[in-house]
Length: 252
Image (cartoon, one colour):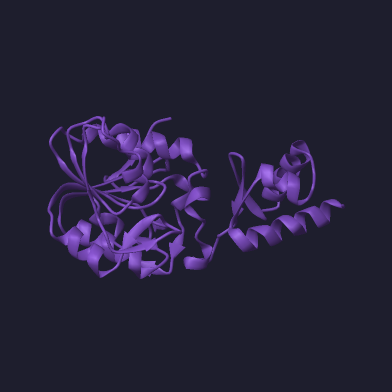
């Protein structure tokens, strides 16, 4: 198979599922891992994709992203996970024992439970991955939000979920997004059903916090969420000059 054919097949697979792993490409092409890595490196240089640890994701520059662009949750947990863990751990430093928290769905929020499950806090969440991480030894108390289950996001949404979220008040809510734009002063999601739950939590929280790694910067989703300036703190590994005061760049 020629290099051009390999690249075309990779782009076709990315068009279908928005993310590919090195291991699955060795079988799909087929080719050795070394060949796959070289091909991905060249394609990244040509701005055909963006490499991540263990694979690559689709290029989204200049596009408004919708539900069709979302990556399945089991795959999203592979994207920049070390950065997401570092951001989550840093954000947890502001939490005090005894607080009431809302934890959003999304792969940016899920890692936070590793730093909270052994602390005496109360967690309200629609994120099923967070609930699965708790067991009888956990010090954290969890209140599960019901409603319509979205398997793609492993989270609950809909009217029942919104009503449950609105029935509590929180010291802090930790939210995720598809992307944020500093010039537009806006954060984005891909669809309204997830945004509605986020709005309910933000409207009932004393402190509203966003967790977003650098891949979310300058990415626009179909649905506007909240202005960047509305958040009390945005924890990210994105760095740059003259950032707003509420953006906290997490050190490496």
